[in-house]
Image (cartoon, rainbow, N blue to C red; front, side):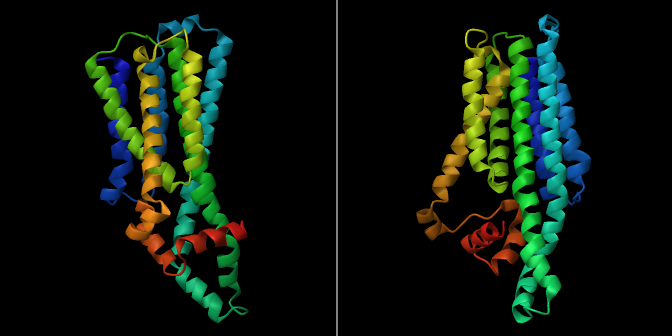
Length: 283
């Protein structure tokens, strides 16, 4: 089996385990910081070594320096978003779990309950923004940019040898795993529109950059990314159809799977559209 295809399959399974083990086992909230974030650093280092061949010596130093700078920038964006989300999420969850009490207290004592007013009208909306919006935007932008840098690295330095059936099977399975994880992530992270734009841009960019130079059939990492973003677009389309207002009227709205308990507390006070409108007014 092609070494890049084998690495893609192994690490896709590991990614699935790293992200779903905390939902099944009591691993604690610091699993994000101790395991998940360093795992992506290791992931990028391994793929750089696996994708880059001896041909890297034939690439100009300026081009490689530019690519490495792009990868470092992607890392900064990813880890900045990861740290922001981890911190804000813990605070936001704490407030959200007590949101019904804070809200009711502010109604009963509108003038005298100053701390409740501050929490409700000022702090919570900003923390929510850093947690569920900006933090996620940085994480997924950094992740997709890292995938782009891997594709560029493969175009410039990859082996570009014909792939076998086992290689294609491994790539398709791995892309299915990553596509599923990204679909769930960008929906929860309110990153749907940017994800669509970036996915289409990645596909078009690869077709333009590789034209006349390499074939996608001989570029396992690029093929893996292209299939993943196609599955991402398909998943978002299906999710959009299933959460259409007509569908939601009969089946109901889908909450964020990973935060069902917290959202249940929130929706004791707000329904979805009222909460969204409230956040937009404050922001």
